[in-house]
Length: 146
Image 1 (cartoon, helix red, strand yellow):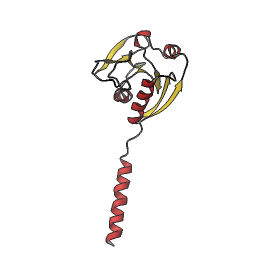
Image 2 (tube, helix red, strand yellow; image 1 turned 45 degrees about the horizontal axis):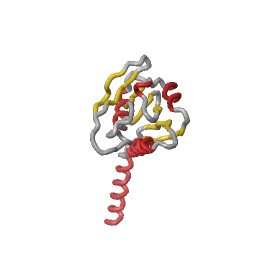
Image 3 (cartoon, one colour; image 1 turned 90 degrees about the horizontal axis):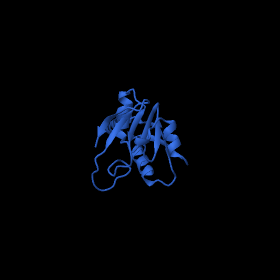
Image 4 (cartoon, helix red, strand yellow; image 1 turned 90 degrees about the vertical axis):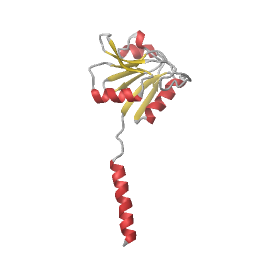
């Protein structure tokens, strides 16, 4: 009887644990070149933070960015889409999750260029950088500072 009760306790604990499993962060589609190592590292960062990632190698990133409303001053080495939002560059997963939770009226988030301390770059040192929220009219606002 004790053994049956202890097995039932273990099964109950497992069932409770399964019920607490974190829901996926969402599916994100990334457009990048086939040779960019930092894009692959950023994709790993997204997956480690619960995102399902679909990656597509493209020849013309400028065209993808332009089609998604990313101005030249906000561009980086990859463009992504999640829901109705655009993500440009090495935006931290936590900021994407925050945007999805808050649902601001923006086109998306961008980290211009390739700051050395942004996710996926992971180079030694701390280069300060900003994450910008941007709108279709070209306006931007600082969304997060690192």
